[in-house]
Amino acid sequence: MKKKLEKLFENLCCSHCKNSFDENSFTIKRDEEDLTVVGLKCSHCGKDFGMAFLGFGNIEVKDVEPLEVQQGPEPIDYNDVIDAHRFIKNLKGDWSKYLPS
Image (cartoon, rainbow, N blue to C red; front, side, top):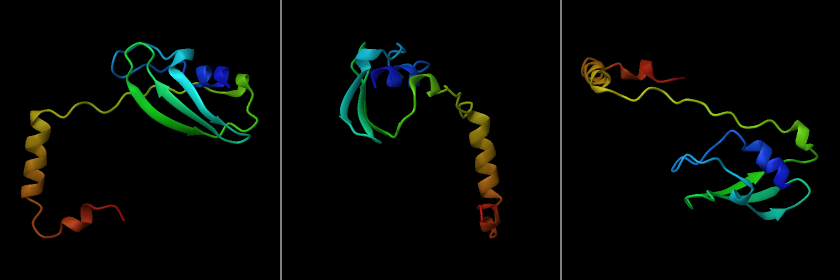
């Protein structure tokens, strides 16, 4: 099970200290046939990421794809705030047309 966890998280790092997760970052709390409960804590800085409930079933280690790090949107800047303010100011009465159905 530890090998599956290492493979799954091999491309990820701690959001606090940026060190990679290693085999000491995972604590298996419960391991059943179709469910594994894991605690994740950075072994370098100690940041606790809580618990994860994982359903591996009969997946082999070679079949486990590592999680992919995705970049978030660009930070909001001053112009974004001004644009949002103008948009809201000019909505008038029919603001519901901008809500998803």
